[in-house]
Structures are given as C-alpha cells and as structure tokens.
Length: 112
Image (cartoon, rainbow, N blue to C red; front, side, top):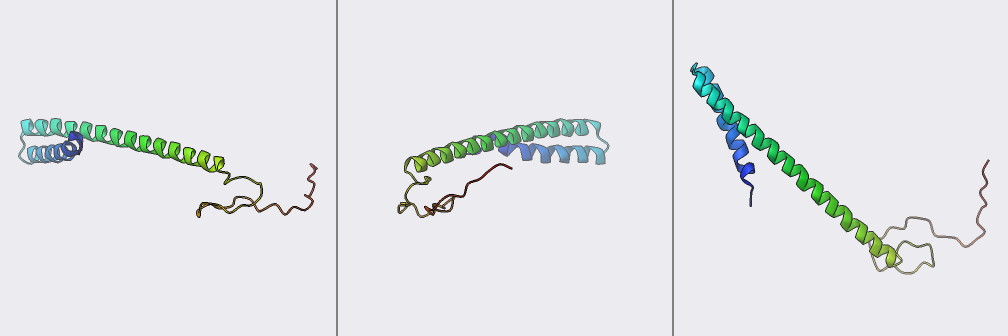
C-alpha cells in the first residue's frame, strides 16, 4: 500500500506549477501566490518521501548485511572455509579462497 506522501507529492507539484504558470500568464497575483503555496507543499512532500525512501533503503541494506553475516557464520561453523583436509563440500556455490596446501615443505619467508 502506498503512502499518502507518495501519491500527494507529484499531484501537489503539478498543481502548484500549473497554478503559478496560470497566475503569471493571466497576471493574477492571488493565483500565483496560491500556486506557490501548493508548490511548496509539494516540495515538502517530495522531501519527506525521499527521506523515507532513503531510510527504507538503509534498513534493507542493514538487514541484508546481517543476513550475510549470519550465513557466513553458518558456513564457517560448517567448516566450509577451513584449511584442513579437503572434503567434499555440501554447497555447490562455495568458491575456494586459497590454493590447496600441497603438503610439501613451506617456503620460509624472511623480512628483508
């Protein structure tokens, strides 16, 4: 269901612009002022609608981040990201992040 501001904002903006232009064309100061007032209300409704849309987007982003974090914890708990013996993964979409350990002598790294 749509919010009232989502429906009213474009209507108020269009009505306000029409009122201002009609008032200017007919040289009617009252109509111009009334159109300006309606236009200001439309601008406020648009700002409100935009702020609400940004908040909804931030909430969705936070929910997706929390869901991804929980999924990563489940994957780590299931042993999908370990360097132990390579076992068959139960997930088809797991990408190996490191090359497998070859079991040979590791090359010693020294600071220079």
